[in-house]
Amino acid sequence: MTAMKTLAVIGLTTLVSACTHTPAVTSKITYDNTIRQLVDKRCSECHGNDAPSMEAFKQDQEGYKTKKLGPRMDTYENLMVMVSGSDTGAIMRRLDDGANSKDNKPGNMYKYLGSDDAQRAANLALFKSWVGSWNLKKAKDITEEERKGVLALRN
Picture 1 (tube, rainbow, N blue to C red):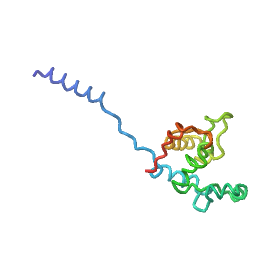
Picture 2: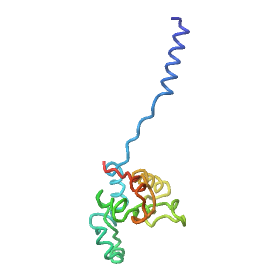
Picture 3: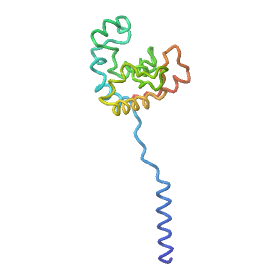
Picture 4: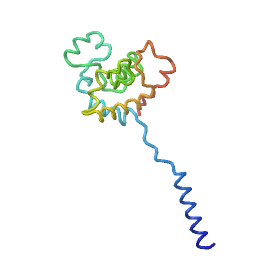
């Protein structure tokens, strides 16, 4: 094989290799590897282990609000109540940036997702990716297809 042919083969092999190289797969977002830390950092002051269960919160919402306590979000199970449980969509309605609402107003907890717009947007993107089927509907209005679209992986 001549030097010219050898260089051509090496060049072609390098080109094919570069074109067929698959990008590194990013790790999936789960409660255990991402969301739990985000909730701990951004939400636990009002939604930690001293906060009421969803049932208790609903019985005395005003009382808990004056104490600056919302429903517990300190475990996967407690958070899932607001993702696809008895209070389906609550986490989405509260954290949404307004892009999905009729009035374009962000949810009442959006401001707590970060210290600036970029951090809030990045953390919202993590939540959206984790949830999968991001919508602001209440449990009674969500379709079976939308419910099946919820990912919210634990680990």
